[in-house]
Structures are given as C-alpha cells and as structure tokens.
Amino acid sequence: MSLEELIDYCKKGDRKAQAQLYRKYASILFGICLKYSRNKTQAEDNLHDSFITIYDKIGQFKGKGSFEGWMKRITVNTALQKYRKEEHLNVVNENVTEEIEIDSAYTALNLQTLLQYVQELPNKYRLTFNMYVLDGYSHKEISEQLGTSTGTSKSNLARARMILKEKIETEQNKAIIGFILFFIEGMI
Image 1 (cartoon, rainbow, N blue to C red):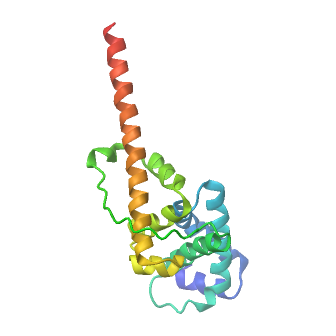
Image 2 (cartoon, rainbow, N blue to C red):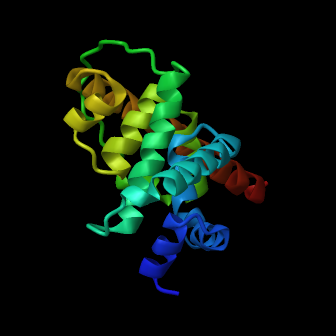
Image 3 (tube, rainbow, N blue to C red):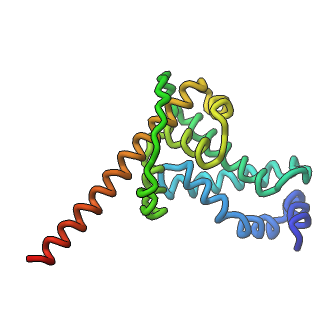
C-alpha cells in the first residue's frame, strides 16, 4: 500500500491502516520523543499522545509537503504542550549568551550517554537545546513556542551547553583516571 493510500485509509478511521502507520513511523517519532522527554516512560507517553493527535488531525494534511515532517512537527508540539500545561517551564529572564564550544575530542562518548545527559537537563534547557541544536529552530521560533523572550532562549541554550560540557568533561576525566589506574596497576 502506498503512503497516499495509507493516509486516505487513516482519514477514514481504518484501524488497520492506523496500526500500519504506527508501525511504519513509531521508531522515528519515538526518537524525537526521547529528545524532548526526561526518560523513556515520558517518551512513550509523548509518542502515544502524538499518535492520537496525528490520527485526530490527519484530515488536515492536504498532501503538501512531507507527511513525515508534518508528523514530526505534531510530535514536537505535543511534547511542548505537555510541558506548558504541567508548568514545568518556569521562565527565568536571564541574559547569558556565552557560546561554549565542546572539543571534538569529546565526541568519543557513545550516543546513549549523550542522550542521557540531554535528558537530565532541566526542562527549559533541554527543550531549548533540542529545538535549536537538533531540530534547527531559531531563537525567535523557540521563544514563540515556549512563551519566552529570545534572550531567554539564548540564555537557556548557553546554560544547556555549559551543563553538557561539564558532564562530558567529567566523563572524559573519569575515563582518563580509569586508564591511568589500569596502566599503573599493570606496572605493579
């Protein structure tokens, strides 16, 4: 079945087509949910809520643009709405705009560890980091989505980068110390 046919069947409320759509795109959208959630359970909840919205609003998709992109936008918006409703985003008006570069030597960390570090960020920093760095939103778009100023968006991004840099440096230092201890023990 082509994507167009699958969408048409989903618009008619066909449960089998909805299940097929879920199987086809769940892993892609779950990756987005992981970026915007604190843990796997929250990501699963966000994925579930996103698909409910997708099924509910699929009639609004007119075939213009990418269907996958349309679903990704819904997924991001669903996660953001959840946090706005739960008032996890306490706006702090800070004007920290310092750019922090993460040394390329730190990229040796595995993806799972990096994802964990991003998930551990405070909500406002995690959402801003994901939207700017991973999804390509501008500070203006982020401020509109989160109901903050562009200065706050820039500040939150800078703080997120600073926290991530500290975590990565700590991880690298642990690895170096472990290597040195291993080397020293081998000499004894």
